[in-house]
Image 1 (spheres, rainbow, N blue to C red):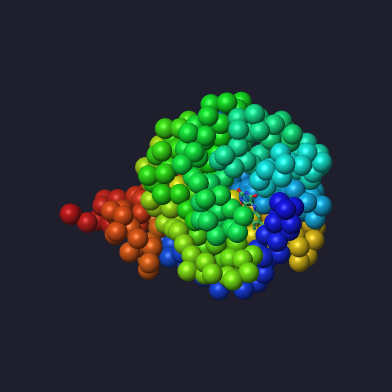
Image 2: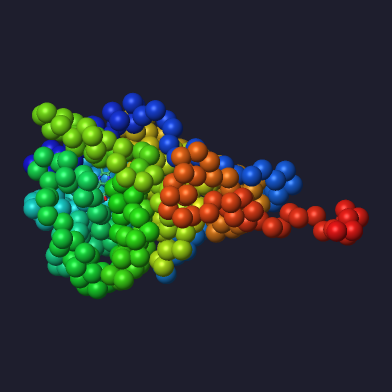
Length: 363
Ligand SMILES: Cc1cc2nc3c(=O)[nH]c(=O)nc-3n(C[C@H](O)[C@H](O)[C@H](O)COP(=O)(O)O)c2cc1C
């Protein structure tokens, strides 16, 4: 049952990638261009650290697969791509392993192919502490993702219908495993209120997982014979909106959902993300063009991200949070409704003001 579901998800996610309009709310975020802000490329470092974790680059392959023969092969290739490019990688939900330990290889292959890389295990919010520990052990994970996906479960024909146990269970898992716990949404977004709650539960970082890319309401509705949940397509906050909402978050935030190219990565970092996750875009590359193409694509993204930092005058990903940003369109409306002032984002750099003595101004 789970194995078939995982195969369905892959097929429907790739179809969705092919049909996507291409636009999302990252397009409402642009950098103010300062023509003389550029620095020297050798001075740029992509390494990032947050919640006691250190990554070579602020980009990761986010949770997708495992649990069936087909998705085990995908995990093998994703593991190879992570190893070759040095980016962290998350396993897909490991629920299938608890139900059928025979599919363990479809997950452990991630670690087998990538023995020294940063690997995240993934469980749902109803997993027992014992299962969460087993998931971590199986792939010798460096961190654990707990996915929260109430919208997906609601539309999923065989999904959960009771969610009240999730909050206390997240707290138990966070206290009961030996690695940092990151809670992630799967494409509907975490609000600032949710991020605050997660901090109080002992969660170390929040992956905001917003709208704009893979839409699991649409995927699960595609698995319903009547397709009668179409009204939930597009539910939730965009990833850019979540980042703005979580400006004063008490824990580090990661951004994922609808990341299409290196400029989206830079935008998310500039909006405060410590790292940026990609799923659908990389899955499509892998399935359409193979693992060598995925390795080339991730390598190009890292190179182009460094190029963006260079022209923006940012030595590190964290430096992007001092770049001036314009927030437009619907995203600006979101800010107004949530009490976020978008104007200070356009004046963050402060460093390019020409001193009055140089202009001869007497002001
Ligand atoms: C085929 C597929 C399977 C997924 N399975 C999982 C999963 O098992 N656990 C999870 O936390 N997220 C899962 N996700 C969600 C992604 O991690 C991510 O949150 C979501 O796809 C939004 O990112 P994107 O727009 O870059 O695809 C899956 C995504 C895809 C495309």
